[in-house]
Image 1 (cartoon, rainbow, N blue to C red):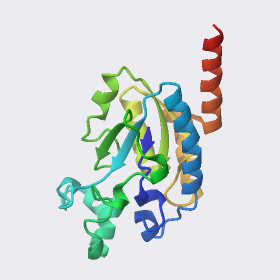
Image 2 (image 1 turned 30 degrees about the vertical axis):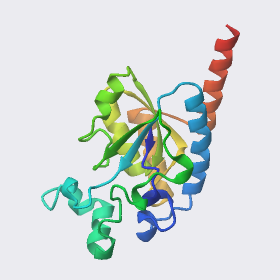
Image 3 (image 1 turned 135 degrees about the vertical axis):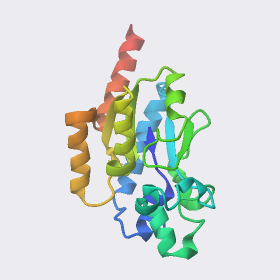
Image 4 (image 1 turned 180 degrees about the horizontal axis):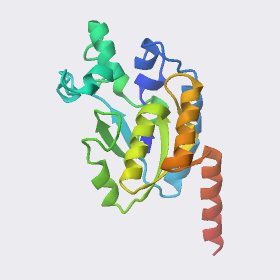
Amino acid sequence: MVVDMQNAFASKGGMFDLSGIDISGARHVIEVLKEVLETARHTGFQVVYLQMGYDAKLTSSGGPESPNWHKELALLLMRKRPELKGKVLTEGQWDWEVVEELRPHLEDLVVNKTRYSGFCGTPLDSMLRTRSIKTLLFTGIATNVCVESTLRDAFFLDYWPVLLHDATMQAGPSMLQEATVRNVENYFGWTLTAAEFVQTVNANMLRGARV
């Protein structure tokens, strides 16, 4: 599960950067994810991208009657700076696109979402179930917002969630990253480092080849 690895969250000039959120950790996440995704694809894992984005007229935002309208950062930023309307987290725009180094491959699944959780109002659950997928490995940005929201929903839907915590980045101070990692470890799933994931997968592949 590659959550919101978009220019909005990880690139200079993207939504986070324009909002004053520190994105200095994004480059590390991108580099770690390169190896994770290479290993995952090579060993037959289904890669799923979640991509946050609204239509140009914001009809999918929920409007003023929705709490999403009053809390979601892109919507707040576009109201504060009207010149950004239709450019921030808007389908088809640079801000919405996945960062160049991590663009989806043809065999990957891509799910657009308009709420923090990738399960809310999307076909994600049915896409996973029809493929008999039960274990979900979470990466991406932001750990404490969209990653955690989707991971919690996965737990409630009886998936087995695993957070690759060094392949994620929080929105805000480091204490928020630590809080999500602790929450997952104690209540909602399991955690691994990216290196532990790669080593375990490669070891199992080698063991299978020997058999």
